[in-house]
Length: 438
Image (tube, rainbow, N blue to C red; front, side):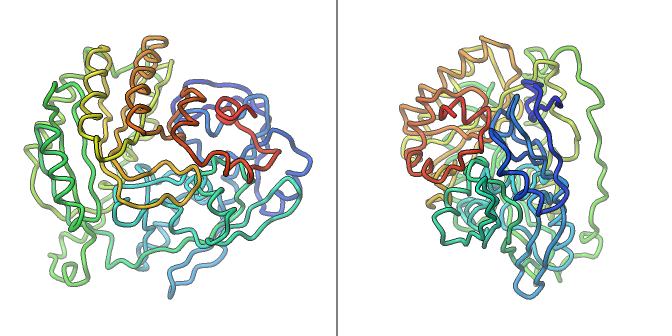
């Protein structure tokens, strides 16, 4: 038995753990297991990757590249390979993952099981849109070769690890001229400005995202970022000094403080400082993809700053039609609760159908915020936010969730019954038992 936590550090419960180091181990182990789940890098926030008192199959040992086709840009790798490892191998060779989330310390299996998204959903969709095929081990003892057009693929993408254990996958990368982006930073001072910037940027900019100060009142201020990959011509025109890959200077949060560093004393001044510093830096610049896509990766173990009780992330998406009014209502409820967040992200999703039956992205606007765990006080706030989201026809992101109700889940994911026909009976998690009853 081993104690295992997710990224939110909300629990630390015992699990029966089996580390995998070879692909053929999975098909051998699964038929003899019950209540089993694959566990990758542990970067999901809540209980989607946990299975207390059950079995966890640790996939980080499945970290081998199987085949790389430099002509087509297709890479075949085991499910425990980190997205960072793919980027480090392929970016110098002119290829890049089309979609990456806010951290690159995520396994390929986890990226598929949660159908992660990035800052370019309106342009290139989510991670699952670029999965060509995968090998899926099931408790029957079979290892199925699943293709992009198969119904089982659409259940496995965003399927929370419940259709079996992803052993390996073939991912289609995108051709790039280099690792640099032309990025623009703009300050805004209202939701009207945010939505105007977002709408105006959707056609000409591949990557769009914003940080929003959720404590700045009825006209919330924020920082809007947008970027495009540099073309070969733009790259050739760069001064050589601009093409130096930045040195990685990863710092670390060395310990868990006795109380959360995100609190009523620190939030307002920190948010104000962050806004004014970035407003001062507003303009256009050439940037390397890593600090733009993954700014928090420069601080290892940043989750520790929330203290011994851990933290929740609340991420919702609501339809675009009433998105501005809904976001305004969410921010008002947060302000009235006395809670607050520094890591607050507001962005829009494109008009695209989701790859998976339980995929989170849908056309609309998504808001994500981190909150220190203050027990019932925090849960009461989430209940009020749930009411707003549900009434608007929205849903919550299961990769971030640790507490939504079964009713909220069923209302947000109308294809649940279709998904359940593909569930492997041996696979289970704390989240599946909470939301699906098994």
